[in-house]
Length: 272
Length: 268
Image 1 (tube, chains in turn red, purple):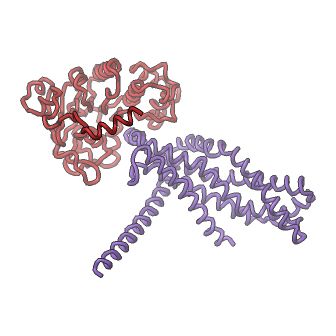
Image 2 (image 1 turned 90 degrees about the vertical axis):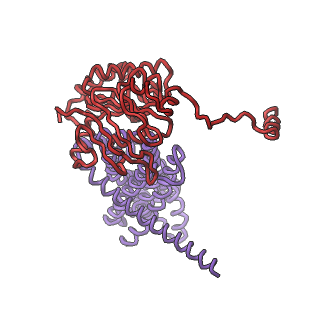
Image 3 (image 1 turned 120 degrees about the vertical axis):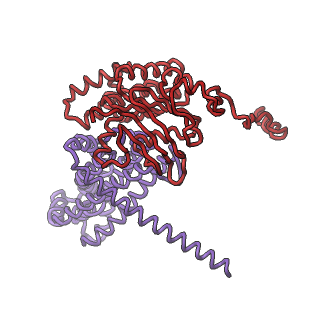
């Protein structure tokens, strides 16, 4: 598998939870060596798509090809081998609360290799150094800020030098400086690991313009666009224009008045 | 008339559905246990995790078990003395206290105490891990969450429950000694002589068997409830963790008492 190019191809992918269909026939490609951003409004199925790519959810229909392999048709051991080539940054880092940062980041190494603890600690320090957290190796996740937890999650995601790095909303909930730092980190990952496929789920337009080489836009469970960033900017599709222009839906009207009787009743209580 | 028949059919259907649900969840819990036990032996690295859990379930429960043990023994000593003295048999106090503790109260009270202390925290910790993507993160790292979270807890419970029960029994017998001998004046030699002559090996093995079964029940139910927090239909998010924890404690306690009756009826 060492010479494999780790492209991710989605072919007529249908998926969801229980009987609810969220992904409705997505086609698209997330090429290796590039940062691909999966973009879309809240609840459009971005995170669901990510869970399918990770193999956490099984598609209802269609296929996901990873590195040329039909991911869900592989025998169990092959499926696991490919999964080990993936690193994931979950929305809140998903660090194990009972372990220190060092133990969290070193967990995959401790479980899958026979490396001595000293070597593992050296590797962990290096990875934490890449995300600027080397001094926090013995801290517990609850002693860190949200941004630091995300960076630690990124360090854990890259500890096994994965071929595919998947990040679920890495900048959500971060202040502008931390969000910019996270973007910078992802760009430096691309520089450090040129063959790595980096897939970022996001609805942060600023981040999109900074990091994306390739964009997959999802709208109502389907791929509204798949291609490079420049193509997306020039596209004439009304939804894509609305999304990139941050325009509200014309049917959504803000509620201005509560109604005189309700307002009066509320005012009485507020004055008490 | 037709409406009455319809209501009856609906009631019977609901009863049938809940029976099927109950039986299928029993089956699921059993399969969960089998998988958990199988994975205990999946890797030598499991030993470290088992020792960590033994520290949590065992060492950290020592104080509470000792405390409950001494007071249970003291109460048994008091109650036993005032009952036996009516028949002029207060010399049998040692036998009464030790047999009650070894055969019945030791395993049951120890199990219930550990359920409150460790079982609830197993369910809550695993439940929080489930709703905060930590279990998915383990899965994606190709670390089997069952092997990482459930198996060490089951193994540690299998080891710790009988040991803590033994401690409870010993401290309880000393509690009985405190009230019976020190406070109420029974002869010390008689107290221990009656224990020596009345307690047989079958009583001790029976008590340990119960402790072992209770350990498996508490660990399995608590881990199962936590692990399946996301599948709860009555609640979501943090509330589902709290409901899983409550369910783990209540179900464990009920099953401890039910299985206690079943084991006792086989042992007698």
